[in-house]
Structures are given as structure tokens and as C-alpha cells.
Image (cartoon, rainbow, N blue to C red; front, side, top):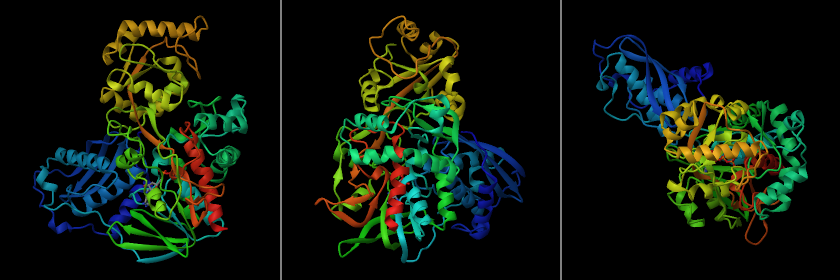
Length: 596
Ligand code: ADP
């Protein structure tokens, strides 16, 4: 995910600088010693997902410009942090700047990189450090605001709802508590299941709405609400065509992924194998339609009048209360509660601090708690999914490990396979946790690598994993096993058996479904993985119109919900690629119905 900051972002930074002076003033900055050189210097720091490289310009003894040359941190999320932190550094000529909440690791990594660049210019730490930590500028807000529709949460569901509601003529506000939009949708792999997609047609995969429905029901142990699953299956293709043709979302041309639990390959994958393009295109269309998107505004409470939801009470970043009145209704699109350990354990004590999470920090279950206060019914709260292939240091999802879908195999430190790699996420996760040191190793070679080029598509993550000692690329299997501390002899035997199975010569004790490719040609890759909390299947009970249902089985008037905040669509276990389909399909339904 190496990238150069766009011209647009740099322009935004310049505009921010022109428009405001952040916290303390330039006069307060330390006088720069003559030993400091003028010019442009590069520096490096450690972000959330690897190296951040910056370029800092010093002229007339002050920092005149800083820009990011490359960063592995999630686009969108890190962009917001980068813009704010750089603006504050330049405006105050100081690196003593507070971190952006929710993106603190990116902020610290960025500040470290800027300090590194300054040190190369001959500056000491004190030269560009104000005594006080500089606070990032917070906007002031009207205490009372009225819209037709108030949407809480700017992830995939909230933004899809915003597009539809605005297209139906409503005046819409989306409030987002984090400094950035996108939610878990942004940090997802951008895959959505679509029976009958253009990608299936291109490679001749035979699929149907009914088969997708059945896989989804079965994948959730038949505990999902069949009428909601029918809506998901019936509307998936239409939603995908809308994203591609109407909004202009890009999809990877040659990638059709078969996630675990699906009978056929049916997931189309957004450009770059992440959610950025989805979010950017949804947000762009919403804004074109006049939707207001407010970040760093947190909804706390629903407003009720005569039994009807008529708005929400929120809190701005500066602590001020804002009441958003909703003439037509409120849509809860706050995502799940994977980042809320206390809430996780309240509903499923097994998911304690042994598990990190793949989630964005904003997914703390707020929408569920707010709706509970108006007697909303909850469903399936104990069903919390772990994703089996995550980074053992950070807990974040590994996209390099998508080679599993192209045929990679999982072994334990003893060099043995222990699970069908393409089984459901819960089965694979439990399998991994049962192994020595509660982790596993994913192995693949060139036959698999050249199918999806995952180490290239996710080059930044690949580099980080190697730096962290979590992945090795080696010419031989022996070398790879040795480097990762996996039993060499056993692994060699496992791979020999496996290759015979792929060639149709033997059966395996532990089955293997999905893509079957030999692991014979080097270089080989061996990556250590752990499961991490990923998706909360439970949440608000909704009907087919995305209206929230209360504990007496009645509709809560004026309240709609869509996306991970809802329950009942995935039963006990959500299949891969079903979250994005869910958020787009039900987000659109909520957006249309709230206006009716
Ligand atoms: P979905 O996939 O269902 O759209 P996401 O996780 O993508 O869910 O998005 C949910 C968004 O809602 C996140 O960006 C999260 O920060 C935001 N959010 C959660 N709670 C609140 C709240 N109380 N007020 C405003 N935004 C919230």
C-alpha cells in the first residue's frame, strides 16, 4: 500500500494552514540555532502498519512544509491524522503536537519521522519543541440543528444510507465520532459476495441467489432470520452494479475470491483489496448530493417524543452538546462492538484480553446501547467472530495471508496440518488457538503466489511482516521452516503428502476444499498468524424495511438500523465477504425507507 499523498491532500493542508493557526503561536517557538541547515530532509518513523517516510522543508529557520512520501497505514484513517498533525507542526514550528484520537500510532510515527528529518538538518530535539503540547483545532458547532435524516456512523452502511436518502430528496447529516470516516468498512478487504456478478460470468462460475442464500444460512448454523438473508441474497447483484456503474467503485479485474463456507467463488474485490475506494466513492456521492458529514461528533442518546425517535443528542470534540433533530428519522449505522472488550465479555466471556481485534477503534457498540435505552430488542449478542489470520503483534487482519484462498496451507510449529484451511472462520480460529503457542503458520510457494500476487498487492504489509519477523521468504522449504522455528522434517513430509493429494494420488486425513495448488516451487513463504476478534454478529433486531424492533415486537417509530450494528443476518457466524454486501444492501434500504 505504498503511496504518495495526493496533490489534493497537500492542497487541503495548505488551505488548513491558511485558514487557522493551531493552538499556540509561531512566536512561542524556540529560536533556531544557526547550526540548522536549510533545505529538504527526509525522515522515517514507525506507524501502525510499518514505516512512515516524510520530507520536511526548512527555510528561514522554520519548518515551512512537511509531506508524507510513503506510509503503510490505512488510507483515509491515516490521511486525516496526517493532515491535522502536519498542519499543527508547521503552524507552530514544533513537533510537540497531540496525537489524533483513534489514529495515535500513525500520529506518533509521523512525529517521529519529522523529528528524524529535523535531526538530519542538524537540529536538536529542543530546537523544534514548544513547552506545551499543542492541541489540535476543534470546530465549534450550533447547539441545535435540524435535518430530515440523521445518520449515526460514517462507515459503509451509514454512507450507503446517506446516498439513498439524499437521492430521495432528503436533507441528511452523517455524524461520525472518529476524526476520520470509513469505520470497519474502510479497513476491510473490500470484498463482497455477489451471485451472478460480472466476475463470475467472466470465468464461468455457476452460481445462484438460492445457493448463496443456502450457504449463508448454513454458515450461520441456520440461526439467521431467513427473510433478512433473502433480502441480502436478492439485492447483492443490484448493490454491486450500483457501486460499480453508478458510483464508479473500482474492482480488481482478475480477482474472484472464494471465502470459507461458500460453495463457489463469489466475492468481487474492490481495488487494492481494501475498503478505501468504496468509502471514498460513497462519501463523494453523498457530498455531491449535499449530505453534511461531521467527524468527531459522537452520538450519545436518542431523543424520543410521543414514542417516536425524533433526533439524537451528541457531543462535539470540544465537549459541547449538540442536539440533532430529525424530521423524518434516525439511522443507526454505528458498526459492531469488537473494540469494546467489556461489552464483548458481557455477552461472551470467552473473548477476553487474549484476543486483540482487527477492528477500527470506533466500533464500541454505542448504537446498541443507545437503542437499548428505547427498549430495542437485541439478537445473537453472544455470537462474536474471530478472524483466523491476523498479525500476532498488532491484531490487525493480514491481507497477505489471503494466499490461503489461493491454496496456502496452515501448519503448526510441529509442521503438521490441523484444519481444513477453507473451513469457517470459527473452526479455523479455534483450530489455531488449540495449537502450541496458540498460533499457526501459513505456507505457500510460487504456484499460489503467482495466482493472486498477494505479496505485491499488499507490498507494505509484506515488508512490515518481514521486519517484524512474522513472515519469511526463502529459497527452500527447509530454510523457511528453519527461520520460523517450524519442524523441518515434519513440514517437508506434510508438503510432500499434500502435493500428492493435489495431484489426485492420495487422500488426506484432514480434508482441504477450495483452490488446490501444489507447493513445490520456491521462493516459499511461511507466515505466523493468530485469530483476532473481527465481527460481532449480534445487534439490533430489524425488519425487512430496516426498522428497529422493540422488545414487544413493535416497530420503534423513526428508528432504522443497518450494518454491523444489527443482528439476525449472519446467525452465529458471518461468512467472509458478507459484511460489505450486508452494509451496502441494508444501508440502501434504510436510506430509502427513512424518507418514505
Ligand atoms: P458498518 O460496516 O456497519 O457500516 P463500520 O464499522 O464500517 O460499520 O462503521 C461504523 C462507524 O460508526 C464507525 O466509523 C464508527 O466510528 C462510527 N460510530 C460508532 N459509534 C458512534 C457514535 N456514538 N457516534 C458517531 N459515530 C459512531
